[in-house]
Length: 117
Image 1: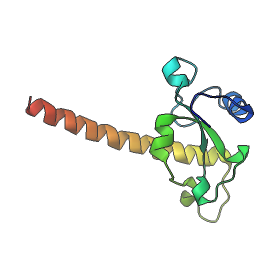
Image 2: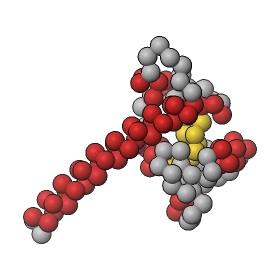
Image 3: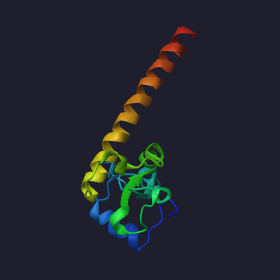
Image 4: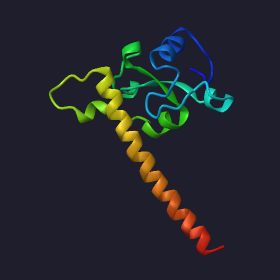
């Protein structure tokens, strides 16, 4: 799906996820900028065998989709078939950790810039 364009699937996802990113809760109707970040995301990446089906789609902002990339939340489950909600929760935790790590890097860069300014 092109970012910011609606189809039947995107409309269903919007309602299912209350127009918010499944991973960071960004309100995708709060502004034009947020709306333009609207993406349909494969919870289990299609490159990892994830289905092209509503059961494997989440509503995501572009940033969370980029951070998650092709990381597969199924790798965190052993001998159990997780629910969609469990997969989303697991991906959300992964993305939160990656955001935290990136923010630490940014803080370090800002400190370095301050030292050399």
